[in-house]
Image 1 (cartoon, rainbow over the protein chains, first blue to last red):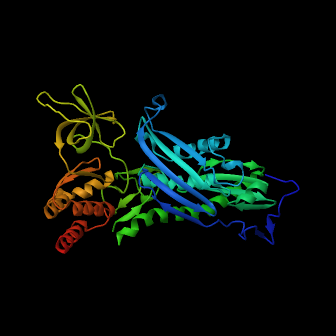
Image 2: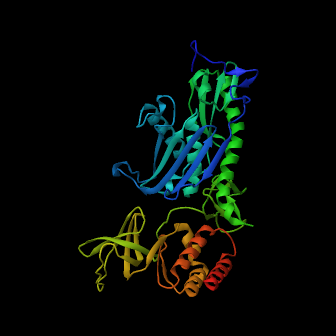
Image 3: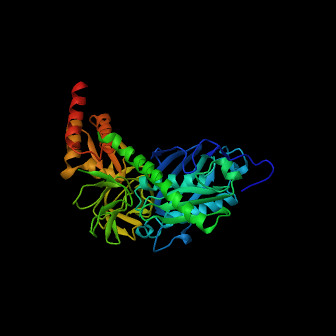
Length: 243
Length: 203
């Protein structure tokens, strides 16, 4: 969230730095189950973000003392590849940021996956950011939802995630890296589209109450496109061989 | 008309008991990705892991022997043990492929096998567990026609491992993988029959 003497101009003639409108998403492309060995997998390109996601399980919980006899445990690992970013985000190994994102992504899927069906087992979700350009956690959640669906694990819904923020007085959808670094506020969120249940909501910077409510509505509107892309990707993996 | 449904997709606007669905606020939603035909019994899963049941035939690899009990690898996350009955005398070596029946599943985690039978020679392939039933076919039609036309001995394990030996083994393998790829299409037994017959004639 920033200021400073080097702050670039983020809004030029009513358009954003990459020529998008304020409610416009970057182009998204999803491939369902590109990996053979994982239980389920997805590859996603969201603007310049490139995310690979793999799902394993349900399998025996490890270490044993973490097993829950009433439901499955979800383990999630979000990791940026060492070559994913220009700045120090991309250094390898678990760090404070990766640990935090792993935790919030895990909580997203704990509320969507029907964990009660697999007592005493564990479901593993691995999110690898191959190239990062702002909004990698929302890209990761969107990809992981597709990967979980391809693994056949029962879920209540197919969640998506999108980030909303504020540049000056403008509420804006889907920040890229420059906007992420220099905007006034940034609010990533994950939503279950069936009843618009909010599964993740974080915020950097400041927003008024009205701006938060408007921002959530803006994210839901943009999310309709994301849901459509997710569904088409899943169906395309099978319809190719139907004919 | 069969359609692909996705998790969270509404299947019926009243509460109904359909396999692989859940009911919320008086409506029925799918909980997996699968094929659904209106007014049918359930959503047929397209992907998923294997859940063992008693009397299932399985194919596995012998891992080790502890006293008289054999540890078998069935590509399952839990433990799989072949326990000899009173009159059985098994002598398997680690690495050998066997066919067995599931006697008991304990806590959804430990599988106890019986009726172990050695499968000598041949090769083993792996298909997705949810596609195995299609490889077998209704009343074994699919697997019997592959056996007949290719003259291959085939043992299908419901855990996804398939053993085969002899005959036109390459063609049998290709046919099984073709079934796996096209498992969700209709009229598959007929199209596989044509595929096998044209392939055998051309060779």
